[in-house]
Length: 122
Image (cartoon, rainbow, N blue to C red; front, side, top):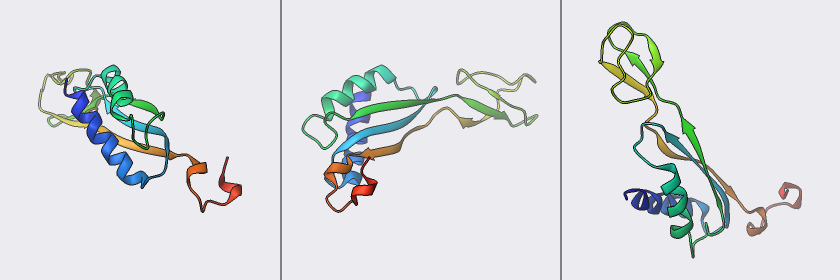
């Protein structure tokens, strides 16, 4: 299960950027063709985040639809698999979206940030 290693990296990256503040939510963009199981990521997140500033945080996965552009006719279209051909028959496809796996947002607990003005705490 490579999702465990992936989640270790995500938790490490988020913890580094959180600089010791408590994390409430992490949003990850996950392309449909990334080859990563979202349910396994959720399971691994709970395990890997224990004892870190991410413990108790929510993991949100934003699924990215796969799209490609044909290098022959330049048509853009949905590519539900890595091998989806263009309507013109070409399989020479430039991937535009769908293979992403990236941290998009980190939400920190405002109460864990000591110098934050009260007006910014919601």
